[in-house]
Image 1 (tube, rainbow, N blue to C red):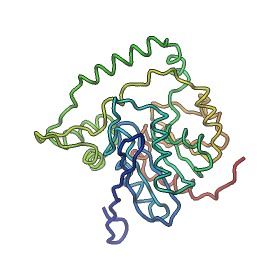
Image 2 (tube, one colour):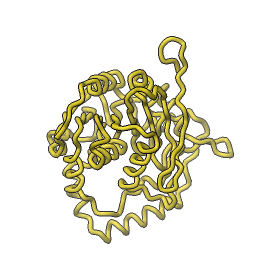
Image 3 (cartoon, rainbow, N blue to C red):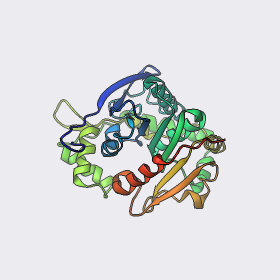
Length: 302
């Protein structure tokens, strides 16, 4: 794709290692500019940020990783994808590219990872945009906490066994897979769905296509959720935070349900007409928000 004039912009494909896994990331160049990480959500991939990266790469050194088990990154041996491991992977990436402090934009799972990283390594993050990365609303939290430890572990074992028996779905064509993607998010244009699908599938030996992500990521952790610890981590974030949400999303308003309360320096942006994938559903409005937020002068935070 062109990025102004006749310049053809293609990101460099690079790798780093975390817990002996070979993990992939895209480097969009402009190394002298301030670093910006774009972290995708669950069952997604780094190329889902392409149009965002192209819009921001003139002002930032954009890095977009594939989380473990996603895109062109290795699948975890044993199929375990815990939040601590995902946060470790981001910490390893920041060390590998040797740039900080970084700005981060994360969506859903990627937003959750970014928020925890920023709470642990607050000195390494200068701005953070989290698109619906706050996890379950209070009502769901209560239901999750009501499940006993034996029930959680048994359920996890049963799900992992079921996933081990599951054969990845095969699609005859990329267009068939893109159609399935549009069923998941009806706001996607045909062009965008095809772009996401081309980079989100792998070709099988028989000529069919299957999604690249590891099915094991579907199984929730058997560990008891630590919501007080999570909120304490959010409270430790010192940089400005923009919480972005689609008004037509299934995710509730964090100001109304109280999830935004632990943050020191956060504000909410409700994007009208967008669902869970704000950056896909309303790209122009999203980019305007991000440009304005990242362009604000940095402030030293207590």
